[in-house]
Image (cartoon, rainbow, N blue to C red; front, side, top):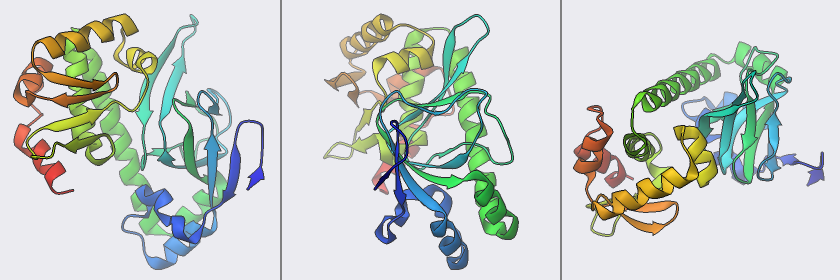
Length: 258
């Protein structure tokens, strides 16, 4: 493995590691897959590293393989806000764009499957199935942005946290959630630390802690660890979120089909 900088390492994508960019591979032809594999590289970044700086050049795009990225925006008054979180299979970076409007940073140690941006753009021009796949990824990003806006529109921190736990179960069911042994309840794992979670929900770490304890006392969740909870009352959590888009049966069914 060749060391590139003090912050990250890079290596060619191994033949048995094709799943590393599974988020983009879905539905691609064998010919396109071979071309994609040829320009793929794995990069490993430590926690709290800057992958792409706000206002900086976008040199590469790709998929998250392991760990969590945070999208962070620095305001003119010096305050920063977490405006998105990316987990395995999510695409990061933007094609046909020279500069980034926000920073892409590592919330944990991460492994990224990267493609040099210009090479990737050239491949898209000749591979319409890849172009279609990237369009779907962009639409997924728009859906995530809408969820974030709706989440912050909720007035109370309790409702925001309830909404966020339900989003994890629905949007990334197999990466952040699993069923209990009787397949009747969901265990959900928050993929980032309390500091990042508090920034994402627009509150403080202390308020997050009080809210989690409140959920436990109300019988909504059982605390397995500071970042992992068993949802004891899924209908109650949905009612607290004030979001009619969540459905108990469909959320459980997605995990049962795993």
